[in-house]
Amino acid sequence: MTAMPSWQLVAASAEAAPSSTLRVLPLRHTTVIAEIAGRRVVFDPSLSPSFSAQGVFAGPLPARHADEVGPVDLVCISSGEATSFDPRTLVALDARHASILVGDDDTARRIRQLGWRRVRVVSPTTPVDVGGLRIQASPGRGLLGPAVGFVVGSANHDGARLWHTGLLPPLEVDARAAAFASANPVDVVLGCAWGLRSRTGGPPLQADVDDVAALARLARAQVLLPIGRDAVATGLFSLVWEQEPMPVVVEQGLRIERPVNGTWYGRP
Image (cartoon, rainbow, N blue to C red; front, side):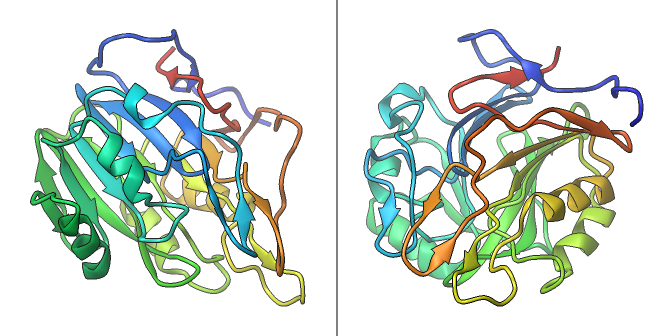
């Protein structure tokens, strides 16, 4: 065990206007609001009361409904799967003037059919600047198709950098995210640690906490918040699901803390 890092996330005050410092609000599974560099970003908007896919997963009610999120400057959608993107949520968000970033053409097409025009497909090879933010996509993989993550920070390269990993395969299956982490240092990682497995055996289908902790260390992060661990698997799949709070762990310069949905976390 090492000393607690000087930059860490702690439970922040409740509601406040977006500030220039970093705050994050996990809402359910991989849906998170982040306030960074004075902008409000929503990752993986999926806040409808019904959150399930027959034979795969079910989840709790969201900590907040879409119409309670407030104005949004940027929407980042890591995949077109139900865990990451719910069209009903997107329609209900106050995000008509927001830019929307996605990782594949099919998801972009579905969003444009809802009436959005400021939709952009991003790739891990080229960063993009949106409204004072610089966003770099990271490689990922969903259960059924492509996925990306998002590193977000100020376009001026000042202040904190946040990485929402999006859906990830295990590192033993695909090492692209590890190479990306080594080349893209960040301060905070929202690591999608779903740990999904088939009940019939075989290797895990999605990354777990050990995988996202390894990625956070490679990215020289100070804080890891594992997300995506509040779903319950059904049918053919099983999850490592923590019903009890995960204790805060600080080792090798990394603070690992499982966030509570509906609680703001930010600079102390």
